[in-house]
Amino acid sequence: MSITPSLSYLKSFFFCGLCFKKMDIQNEAFFCHSGCFKGLSAVELEEILWDELGKFLSHASQRTAAAEKLKEKLSAKQIRLLFKSLKGFVGFLPVEDKERFMNSLVEKVEITSSNSINIVFRF
Ligand SMILES: [Zn+2]
Image 1: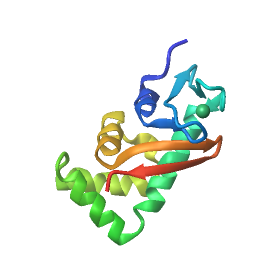
Image 2: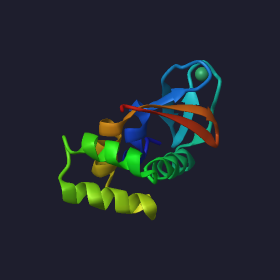
Image 3: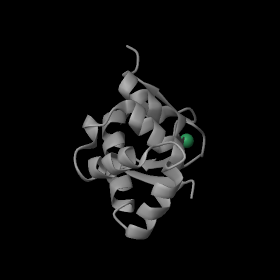
Image 4: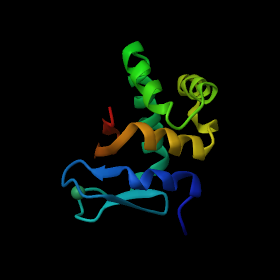
């Protein structure tokens, strides 16, 4: 079984929070090559990720900084739509938009357990 295309964008961002190596995905589950983690549900990690991003951007100053950064790649209308989506169910957001958003704002995501992550922002 190959990976769901809608989840593959996560791969370039996910690092092991214990040994700091890049994580890999197989059958929709993330694992660390050093053996720190295996079988972490990509679907659940994606949910946690966007939940955390939503919380982070609920602060006005952080939202302003993020919008400033996103302006390089997205129109004002797209940014508004993204922020609106973050408050609701982000699953409906097209994967291209998620990827653009992540590329603009996020350096990497360290996975520290099956349900906790640490997001390293670009700003
Ligand atoms: Zn590791």
